[in-house]
Image (cartoon, rainbow, N blue to C red):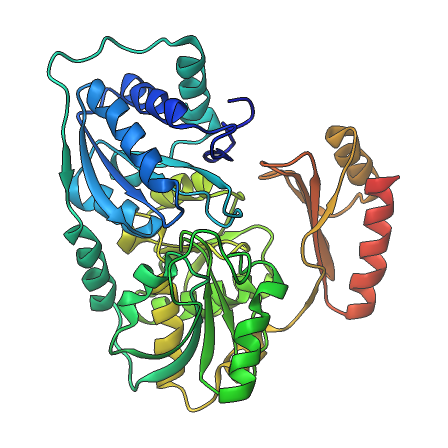
Amino acid sequence: MAGIFKAYDIRGIYGETLTDEIAFRIGRAFVTLLGCRNVVVGRDMRPHSEPLFEALARGLNRQGAEVIDLGLCSTPMSYFANGRLGAEGGIMITASHNTGEWNGFKLSRAEAVPISGDTGIGDIERIVAEGAFAEASDTPGRVVARPELCEDYVQHIRSLVSLARPVRAVVDYANAMGLVEGRAFEGLIEVDPLFDTLDGTFPNHEANPLKIETLAFASRRLKERGGDLGIAFDGDADRVGFLDERGEPIPMDLITALIAQTLLRERSGAPILVDLRSSWAVREAIAEAGGTPILSRVGHAFIKRQMREADALFAGELSGHYYFRENYFTESSALAALRIAALVSAADTPLSELIAPLRRYHATGEINSRVADTEAVLARLEERYPGGRVLRLDGLSIEFDDWWFNVRASNTEPLVRLNLEAKSREAMEQRRDEVLALIRG
């Protein structure tokens, strides 16, 4: 059981660190913590998601909670069902983009408010370890199948977008839950599919669009057959990556800017959250479109809380999470894809030309370094770069007129992560090498 309770979810190797017995105990602990009477539960296509569901449901039922069984679904669908039903809790059984031997649980309270390491996962770990469960109920709960809620999600997402003309997209489903998330495309996007059978062993490639190498298949198909854009889902379909019509990957922060611009045409002045690692171009584009850009911390639990506090219309994260007020302030990769498709359908120019005005600066991408003392690194950087605008929203950000950087500790690994951007490639490369030398020195 050691190490499975993470900053954002519970995740381990099935049959080793995560077993059916542990899943049963997590179900009991979940109800003990929340005192909930009903829990929405969905699962992905991994072979062990079914036995984990059965064990988890037994634990939830044992404590008296009703299990609302969505069956196979995407993570955005599970959040929607939680909010739509007014449920008191939600659990999605998935290990997202991890390879096939992994599985886990994404947890949420009522209204799809996430449970993270410091807002409940640590408590669940303690309850499981100590066996400190509330007394089992005299009237155990039951399992109620509600697969139609997934179709309700599809119809809800489709109702939010209209396309001026059909568009053609290469869609890489990665043998995963994008297949159910992508049902929202029917009749709106002409799909040229890749890896469109469910297979929790991921026989073709890792389901992680953040890794450029996983986009090679969609890129090749676009170059061979053509299309208006490429769409690539991760394992549980709460993240999505995009390629232009030439097969070139589009930076995920620039997608945030494009989606924000389309939304602001309908609701000018709305607040939009921007992951603080994003390009200056994103904030500028939002302001130019009449919106109010607000910087956010990294991580879905922080972003969702900040979205609710600001009543933000939309948020985008550099990792390909796109969050919408219309999906209970949670991710919807299908809605992100349809928003981009709608933009392309209404334009006289291809997606590459729509993105071109946003390619204003030169960014390093995220660079990881293993360090012994994160605080010492941050202190060294702050001392080295006086006179800049300092922000401590998440790690250390220092901004100058012609470049900026953010260095933050990973929430999931013993690393610090650098993101840096400058107005010229030469300045970016010079500053990158300079800052990395300070980090690693």
